[in-house]
Amino acid sequence: MDRIHPVRDATSEPYWQAAQSRKLLIQQCPATGKFQWYPRAHSIHAAGEKPLWVEASGRGTVFSFSTIHRGNGPRRPPYTCAVVELDEGVLFLATLKEVPEQDVAIGMAVVVDFETVDDTLTLPFFKPA
Image (cartoon, rainbow, N blue to C red; front, side, top):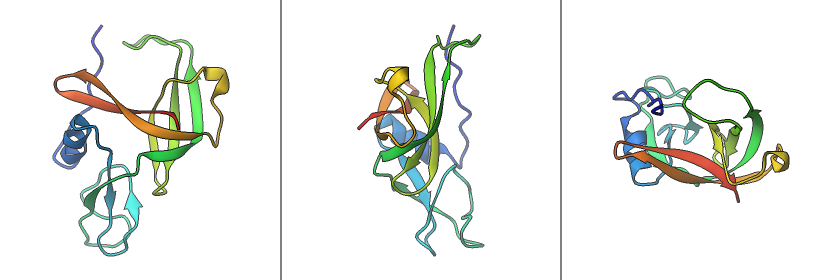
């Protein structure tokens, strides 16, 4: 079964293009310097401001996680989904790989890496730092 592809739109397209180059982009408010995630056409920190795309450090800590043991989609369980708090302060949902599920812990230091799914899709995932 093929992997389900995310829906791309004009707002998120810079993120997807950067991922193809193995770069993790997040948005930053030009007025306040504060970061935001998920992609939006407007700043959540200053009315009327259009956020800028900036490269994230790619480092963070596990804020929360869940290991999926049963599923009916294209992915084979078990796999772990984690909410990662990036060093920039935003929460980012992604798969956690390269760590046994019993070793995953809240507060664990992680770093981003990328998986090329096909020639049109590259996805970020996190692994232990």
